[in-house]
Length: 316
Image (cartoon, rainbow, N blue to C red; front, side, top):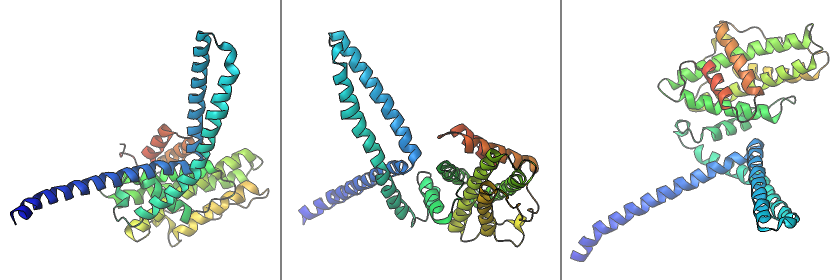
C-alpha cells in the first residue's frame, strides 16, 4: 500500500508531462500544416522558386571562385552541371510538387478548424477560413486573373483579423462590409460608364475596372459569408433596401464579364444604393483598393493603406 501511495504522485506528474508533451507536439504539427498550406498558392511557390534561383546562383558563384583560387578554373562546366542539373532542377521540381501537398494540408486544416467555435479568434487560421469561404461561395468572372482571387482572399483574412481586435467585432465587420458594398456599387457605375459611354473604346480601362470590381465584390462576398457563419445572420445593409445582398454581389460579378468581354456592353442597371457612406471615405477605399489590387505580391504597405481606409482608427 505504501508503495502504491508513493507511486500515485509520480504517476500524476508523468501524466502531466505526457499531456504537455502531446500538446506541444500537436501544436508543432498544426504549425507545420499551416506553413505548408501557403504553397497551394502559385504566388507562394513562385516566391520560393525565386529564392531558390538566388541561392543556387550564389552557391554556384562561390564554388567557381573557390575553384579558381585553387587553380581549377577550367572545371566550370562540371560546377554548372552539379548546381543546375543535380541541385536546382530537382529542387525546382520539388517546389512545384508542394502544390499538391499544400492543397492537401489546406483541406486538412480547413476540416479541423471548421468545427472550432473560436476559429475566428485565431489569426493563424484566418487565411484558411478565407480560402475555404472563397472556394465555396465565390464564382469569379472569366475576365478575372488568379491575382484578383489572391487579393480578395488576402484582404478578407486581413479584415477579419483587424475587426477581431478590440470590442464590437460584429459591428466593425458589418461596417466594413457596408463600406465595401458602397465602393463596389460606385465601381460598377464607373465601369458601366467606361464600357458604354464615350470612352467605351478604351478596352484596357474596361479590363482594369472589371478586374478591380470582381476582386472587390469577391472580397465582400467572403466577408458576408464569414459574418453569416459566425453570427448566424446576414449583416445589416440598409443601403440595399429590400434587395438580397447575395443577389447584388452576384450581379456585380456577372457584370464584370458583360462590361469587359462584350463589344456592345449593356449598362449597369441596378438601382443606386440608398444612404451611401461618406463620399470621401468611399473614394479612399476605391483608390487604395485599386493600388492594392494592381500591386505585386506581396504588397503589405498597399494592404495596410486599404485596411486603414476601410477600418479607420484600427491600425495595428
